[in-house]
Length: 482
Image 1 (cartoon, rainbow, N blue to C red):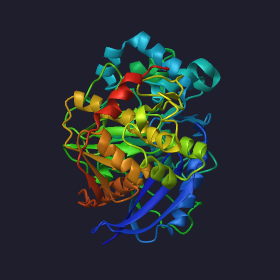
Image 2: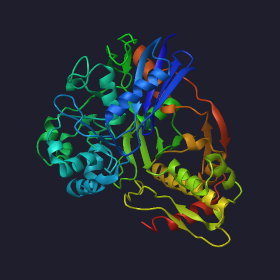
Image 3: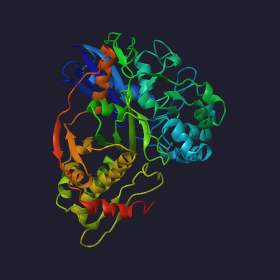
Image 4: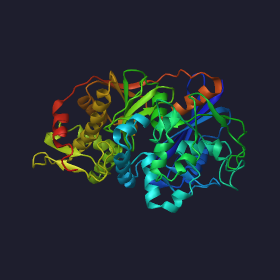
């Protein structure tokens, strides 16, 4: 059987996995770093994709490829297909006042009804309003708006800036999928249409929102095109099928094979809590984003800005590795002796507190120890995600188990604490690049017309212990320092 490739162009790096289409077995993989920061020149993503594919041994034997990537990132192009300014990433909070202004002008109920979500600083719509207000000359140059996976797919097909790509700047050739389009806050997951009136409001009612090129939203399992004759890949035979692509969370759900009753808790740079449902969700409070998934269903989602970097910060403070941080944490009792970390190190998206800071509560001479601080960091991170789980289930989602994924999910202390915090069974899948795996499954779908049925192995499973003191004392402090 042929091979299929999946790409995860995430905040921190680009990962490429190559799988056997029939068995789902991983054949080879590669990766490359992305620059740090909350705004990035998309050319860096393209260079990293080339490096990651090379690191994976190229695309020999690969019949199809698909790209999943970080959601919301604003890529604005001029008429020559050039990137006008560095892309603002999801974790760039400078557009928080712009999001608030849009909510005042249009109303949270209206936005939720028309786009499935209420914009926060992360969303593309808010970033476009920021661009209009802060850089009006750049906003006036916009000829097309894309997201990271849209732009990378376009480049793979051979399109790009004048003089830098075989097929040139054919903006009308841009494509996306419903999962990523749903994260812009100017696309309606229920109708499947762009809401250009809302987009125009973001761009100052200039009329630009009605005229700019937006990527064509293609169906799940459809083909975006084929790999072009690329100077960067002289050894790649053009014609490899390219799938629709996806936002990273939808890619992870697809890679895990998440089904009804599964709630995915992903602990990466950001934290996300999401579930696959057959009906759209609309939350006018803005807590739950009513996204679409990569199969034709929906993906109600809660995101936190702070996740694994909480552990980075406390491990650095204590001068230990992540493994040692977990070992320290397991020396302390659940509840950390009353020590509570409210972990808003980078502001926060859920709750929407972009200017908040982290605070440590309840310090005494008895509980101010290295083990309790380590445990408070892990519990604070998980309690913030448990708030998201409660919000998702309050919207009607049934949670029978949590699928705990992401780099931090491999830490035994995180796994055990998750069973203390979440009120349902916690399953930890075998470590894997599930966003990229989802993209690879999607590539197989585009190639054959059928979604490959690959299995996901479970590495560990924990019955819920629900140590009430942890969530109770966190709730008592929530928002106290905001």
